Image 1 (cartoon, each protein chain N blue to C red):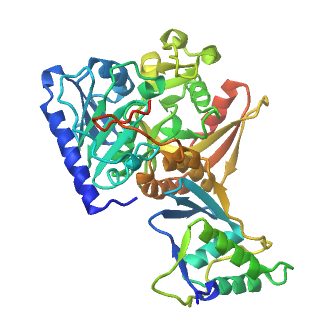
Image 2 (cartoon, each protein chain N blue to C red):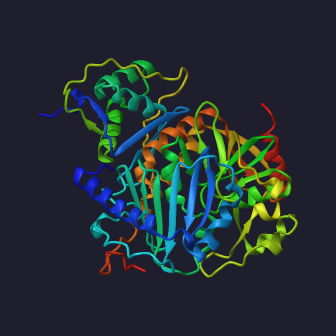
Amino acid sequence: MTASTAERRASQRFTDSILAIADGIDPAGCRSMRIAVGEAGVGLRIASESLERQFAPAFRHLAGIAAGTDLSVTLWDASTAAPAVPRLPWQIEAYRPCGEIAGYSDGPCYLHFDAPMSALTVFDTKRGAAAYINRKNTALPGYEIAGPLRHLIHRFAIDRGMALVHAGAAARSGRAALVTGAKGTGKSTTILSCLAAGLDYLGDDRCLLAGGGEPRVYSIYSSAKIFADELDRHPIAGLREAALPPGPTDNDKSLIYVDRIAPSSMVRSANLHCIISPVPTGEPKSRLVRRPGSEALRLLIAEIVGRSPVTAARSLSLLKQICAAVPFYRLEAGRHLPEVAETIARSLEPA
Amino acid sequence: MWAPSMTSFELNEPAVVSETIDGEAVIINLERGIYFSIRGTGLSIWTDLLNGVGIDAVADRLKSSYGSTGADITADARRFLDRLMDEGLVRARADADRATSPATASIVAGTVYEAPVLEKYADMEALLLLDPIHDVDESGWPNRL
């Protein structure tokens, strides 16, 4: 995961050329918003009505909070009046399956190519400037709309002692339970059962984790994804009406924005009180079983190893520190959802 | 001639990173997208190896700590080292071909000897071995989809 001097120079040249295009895009055609990413401010300049419509809602709850701008991102797509992107300078062999580009993603500039989205991200970490270019102008899949700019946000966050993790979080009285686990273990169901029970919501699939003396969870997306046939399992007013129907690539998952249906439950951050991994049991009762922090570390790092080898070493160090600081529980989740939520609420009582 | 018993080892950085928490080392091979877990006897061997202890000295310490177990502890330790080498997690130190450090890793009192185990989690390896991009258009953008 190290780049040669020549690769770093080439990466910098290419990044400079992309950011020059971004700087030249007519501001009159852009919608701007500044969002809080942890305690940092990120300015988004969206030069596409389609991208603005699809990406902005997930960040809406983070707008108007940050005082300054630590990162400026320009987003555009095929509909934007912008010069063509220069020929991509790396060889085919440089593409890693995760989208990072060998030699071009490993230094001060971070480049990522999302093949399914046909989207290129460039990030000059020293300048604090980035660009997201989607070469299509089409409806994006639900998972992309629910969690825009994941690779950029994680790369930005890791320099600031944070990591974007594959986990949801629910909170009460400023104390959060981070809910993690492999795909399909019921993270969203668990988190939405907590929302229905009156707990605060930080996210169902991605959250920012910050280390330091007292680990903290930050919300990054207001979105939640739920199987369409499970909408009626959660007694949340307006849930069914607010759910956007799944598209052909959404695995029957509907998208909702929690800041719209339960704005008072949407919180921006909370102290990390515990980490929980749900295991559906089919039994009537739910219970928490204390497990070693190493299991939490393996769960949290696994997805980052696949998604971003460039940041995996720093992510491992950060997550180890966090997993050592708070207890980890396996949630043996019964079939009665209110009791699942009650079990999590009990875990959030002061120590 | 290279003799593992007389050699000291180090973490195979930067391709490999490791952290220890709650009696378990979590080790990642970044290039292969595989992570590993080592506990118990394996963790004390791992800790001593990375502190510059030779494998036979590690085995001697285990033998003196556990007493007579009926197991061939030296053979177990050497097999474990072979696995660590095969997975590319450690490498022989270039600057110190003789292991001289004393064994220091702690062994939890009252535990029973168990042969060291390297647990391998390759769930992310499949992702890293996904069909890569084969073709690009005239502007260099992938044509895969």
